[in-house]
Image 1: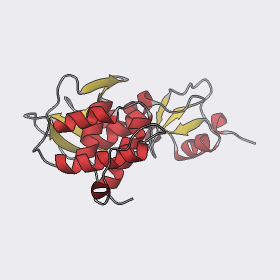
Image 2 (image 1 turned 120 degrees about the horizontal axis):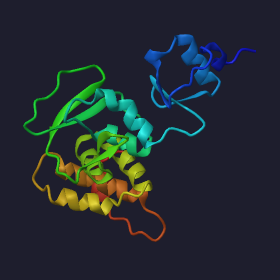
Image 3 (image 1 turned 45 degrees about the horizontal axis):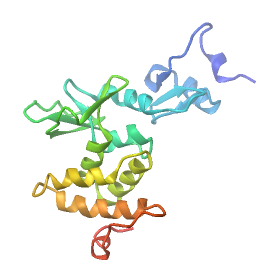
Image 4 (image 1 turned 30 degrees about the vertical axis):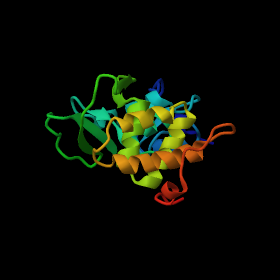
Amino acid sequence: MTDALSLLPAGLALPRLVRREHTLSSEWTGMLRDGVLLPVTDVVAVTGPAPPGPSDRARALGPALPRHGVLGRDSAAWVHTGARPPSRACVLVPVGVRRPAPRPDRTCAEAALGPTDVMLVAGTAVTTPERTGEDVARWLAPQDAVARLVELEALGLDLRVVRRRLDALAGRRHVRRAHTVLDVALDRACRPGRVPEVSAARRRDVPP
C-alpha cells in the first residue's frame, strides 16, 4: 500500500510547518490521512510527532500580519490555548498607525498597546495572556468571550488580573459588559475552595 511520504520526491525533508498551498492536493490529503501531518488550521499543518503548540499557531497566522501588526483578541487566545481557531486573523495596529488594506484572511482594529501588552511567539507579535483576556472580555460576543476566558484561566491566566485591568478602563467602550462576561467566566472556572464572584443578576446577562 502506498503511503503519503512515498508520493514526495526522494530526499525531500518536510519543514515543521507545511502550508496547503505549497503541496499538491493529493499529497496534502494523504499526509493528513496517514498522520504525517497534524492539522493546525484548514490550510496549515505541522509534521509530527509533536502536536501543534503556540509557536506553530503563531507562525500559521504570521503571513496575515502587516508591519507593526499584533495578533490579538480571538487570534491571540487561540495562539495561547489552541482552542477555537479563528475564521480570520485579528490584527491589532497601534493607534495612529495607518490600517493595512483589507484582506480575506484578516480583520484589523486600532488599539492602544503598551510595551507590556505584547510578546513574541516564534517571532510573531501576539498580545500577552493578560491583555488578551482584557480584549476578549471587551470585544468578543459574550458566550465566545466566556469560553475563551475559561480556557485562558485553565492555562494559568489569573482572571483577577483581568478584573484589575478592566477596572482601570472604567467608562470606556464595552467595559461594563466585559465585567459581566468576566463574572460568568470566574463562576465557570471556579474550582473547589474558590468562592464564586458572580451575582445572580449578572449571570442572567450572559446566556449559558
